[in-house]
Image 1 (cartoon, rainbow, N blue to C red):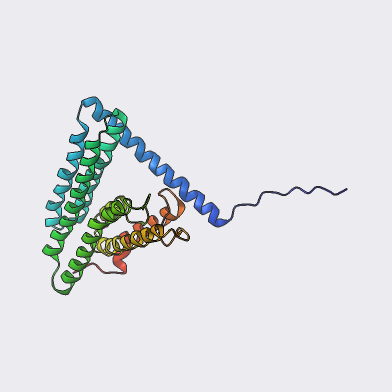
Image 2 (cartoon, one colour):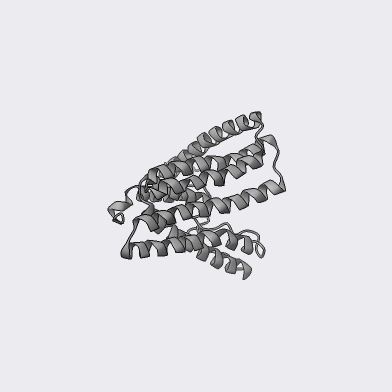
Length: 260
């Protein structure tokens, strides 16, 4: 008669612990911001402000970025974008809580998103033209152009791809990540680091989505999640990459000096 042996559950390794911490921290931060956003949205509903008016406020607030960028005050421009981002999040919350979402509201939100994207980029362009000279100006104008092209085509590539395949939500640098990258770069006085990151990732996400669409249309399954970056938000890989980029935005001037 055999003797039964009990197997103890394996202790989680360092990677598993780190992943659990990253996921828990991501969910905590999202929960705090979600609670604050919904609380403000309920106040807006009580006051009686229409949701479309909240949506249109976003580009108006973003346009205020031109003043601090004209004078070279990057941190103040970052604060302006934080205020604008609050309105960008509020319209969806107001529509959801008040159950007042409409097809036109969704259309208007998408249109204003494009306006705010380009207003932010033109604010950066103003800074480049005012404060950079010589070869540095040329370099960062090229990076600005690459960033602008990537910003313009990222959402279009996905929309066009999803006319042919069920979903094309791949790649890291979507609109939320682009906005946060700009805000942190400005707050740290490192708008030049912002342009390096945006130029790289906005180009990469376009390539990833094109290649991913081709694979799906040819009935081939993409291997793994990394190369096409199919990690959802609030997962350990996404959190880790965000943390690394935030750190680089803050201290990246030690590697790539600020333009003189």
